[in-house]
Image (cartoon, rainbow, N blue to C red; front, top):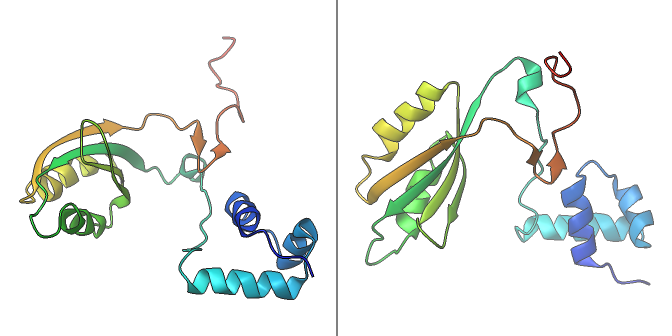
Length: 162
C-alpha cells in the first residue's frame, strides 16, 4: 500500500477543493478510503481549516470595496501582538489579519459596501483602539490574481481599440 504524500494532497485540495475523493485517489495512486480518512484527519487536526470559493463580485452586480490596511500598534506587555490582532480579527469587515515584518505591524484586508464604509470602519472602529498607533489605507482598484487564480485578461475593456 502506497503512503499518501500529504503535501501533494494539500496542494491539490488548495488548488481545487471541488476535486472528488475519487479523483484525488487516482491522482495520488491510493484508495478512496485512504483519501477520505486522511482528509478527515487533516480537518480534525485543524490543518485543513475550511473550503472557500473565489467569487468575482464585480460580475454579480453586488459591488464591494476592498482595502489593504497597514497598522502600527503598541503590543501589550503580557500578550505581545496577539491581543490586538485577535480583537481586530473579530470585526466582520476584516477578511485577513497578518503579523508583518517591516514598516508596520499588522496587515489587514477589509471589505465594505463603499469607500465611505471602509473609511468609517477605519476612523470609528479601528483607529480608536488603544493599541493602534497609526493606520494607512490602500484601496484595491483592480484585482489581477486572487487565491492563486488569475482574474485578469478574461474579458476585454469596451474602450480598447476605440
